[in-house]
Image (cartoon, rainbow, N blue to C red; front, side, top):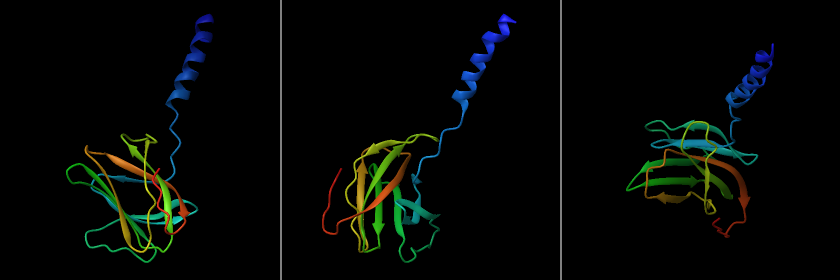
Length: 139
């Protein structure tokens, strides 16, 4: 009986540790991918993986992560609104990511680029908020 009482708390700890992690908000873009998405309530929504000859629909943003002498993240914003957002380098499945600095994403079809010298497996984009037009901030 004493043996059973000692095992029950240990098995409870094991089950708690094995519980799945809560999904993080945002869009995860893996190396070599291009996605189209809208921003609603501060998060990417309606995301769709780009096909070979796919084009953005009105109001969609385009994001891609590619290798070109390191990793390059490109985001194109066809909306009139400017956005501040957060980005995280994701190194493995279920990882919420390590936050990286970003600059205001200008509107009007302009593209923003971020570059790293090493390969990045994936980037998670989240927490978009409208920024004042004409005021670029990097954080």
